[in-house]
Amino acid sequence: MTQSERRLYLIRELLKERKQSDGLEIPSEEDAQQKLLRALLNVRPPCPADRKLLEIQDAYLQEEIRSAGITDLAELKPVRDGIYLWRGDITALRCDAVVNAANSQLLGCFLPCHGCVDNAIHTKSGIQLRLYCDALMKQQGHEEPTGKAKITPAYNLPCKYILHTVGPIVSGTVTQRDCELLASCYRSCLQLAAENGCKSIAFCCISTGEFRFPNERAAEIAVETVNSFLNTDASGICVIFNVYKQIDMEIYQKILGVNRE
Image 1 (cartoon, helix red, strand yellow):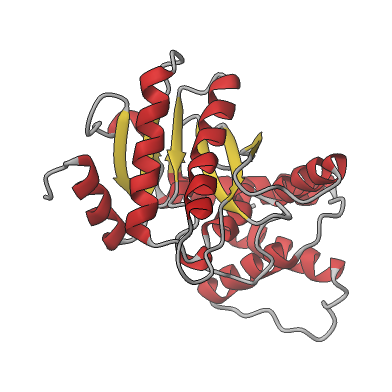
Image 2: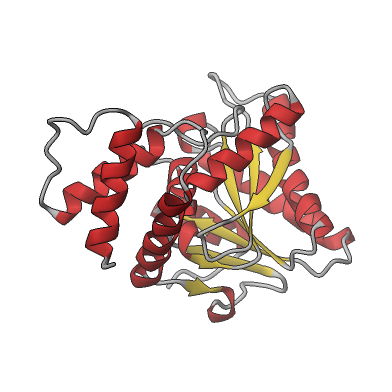
């Protein structure tokens, strides 16, 4: 099957699941089809999926990621021993583990085509990730506490694992408790990564954006916590600070003492 054939197959099957296939005209434009498919994946509940559907989804997602371009950790230059700074799409990074800024349900973002990292990671990882997270949460029996972390397979992403952590939501002024919980997110992810034999971990900017943690203070806590962990840990893990926005790139460059190019 071509990518176009796979995409149309997935759209039709997902619409059938929702009993919305009758009378709905699928757009002919590739971009519109991609957005529709993403939206359908975003809103799909964690229910069992047909084996053929998953096989075609996997082939489609892997080709989409490959054609968009994968960045390998080996291609990056550290800004200091064990620490990297990289601006790009975290779902395109080949390393051992990437960090997802999750919500307390740990099921991914259900808002169609939302711009958060949780949405991107679940979309490109595939249906299996939400199913795995749903099983984890049912076994746990309660929502994921802020500052903790869970590890899952990465499925169709180029990394091996995804570390899901729930950051603090800031309401008004940042409190000391907010800062402690954010630091706990970084420590929990680092400890869990090391326990699972990971030699590299990429952090997104946890709690900034939708959770309203100020970017600069969040970056300071991130760097402080990572430095403290690396100074006492013997696992040899290296850390990638992954940023998406230019403002975050400039903040991390300042904190890490990196010359701007």
